[in-house]
Image 1 (cartoon, rainbow, N blue to C red):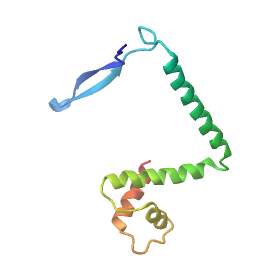
Image 2: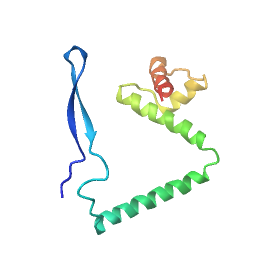
Image 3: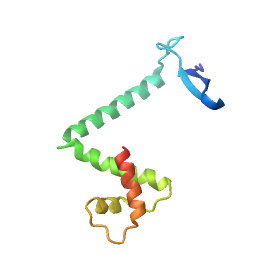
Length: 117
């Protein structure tokens, strides 16, 4: 059964500019979801993966250290999409103020990504 979850509507703005917004339909869906064996199997796998992630998270001595590094990794990858040449190591060296030979403009851009997050 193919089900639409919402619709796109056009919104006018000042100066004649228009943009479109996705407006989801209210919950619960009509007709109600039919959970068959295949869907239930997918839900079970997702719950198992979430349980594994939760148990691994409990083993972290300080989750803020994990988040600290994860945000920096995300900033490096996002800025590389924009064309910077900085690596994860470059960013860490820059933040520890030991970055000889690192292209300063690129690392500063990555650092700006970190600050924005």
